[in-house]
Image (tube, rainbow, N blue to C red):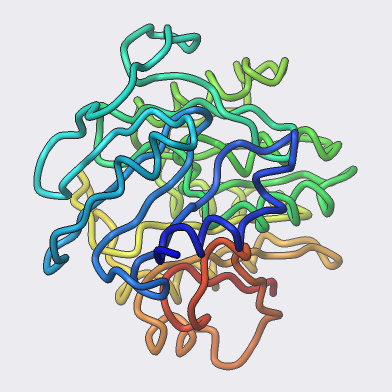
Length: 291
């Protein structure tokens, strides 16, 4: 049996979940082919090759399981190499853009455009946690990207959700995710800097019952200060705590280097695990802590 077939069998519970059709099928670092990952997005297998990966061919095994195959070398564009992509059901309509399901929630993804698909699959358990902990709370979702955490909070019964990002296209994709789930995202998306939003909340005496901090793991360039995890992560968590209600929770998420991120936390927080489809030690990849 091939390494991929063994990995496929280990995900039987996910294959059989009628409310979920997006998850990692194969993580080559820990399942026999370093440098390769394969993610399922609905009827599509999204195959990525990273630097240093040896030659491998997964197409026939994916074909035999009825999946369309999209391949992306991380240095190049994503292309369809087997099968066909169906018609887009997510605006703006274009090839490779469609909706997937995660525990009953619908999210739009885009497999042929942009550096990321729009949904980080390793955060699935975190979105479920937020949904379970959101009822009756005012939620602030910083670095909201496509508002996946915000959608989870809304569907969990949050009293209010504010999604904050500086990138207009990310906020627009967030509004699309709201619409896919029958939610009104008109007033819940704010184009602003996370630190500015926290400063304004502190000045007004505003408090939140749940705050999600999921910033980029690498430095980014902005018109003002940009973002640098080494410079800013500790400051971000400190400022967020200043506007947290007495019984509130703070979810800190990062894929930055483990020794740095956990050094910022200084031993605080309850860790949340990734899904079973993301094997390997907690110190690698995305990590999350509830403060």
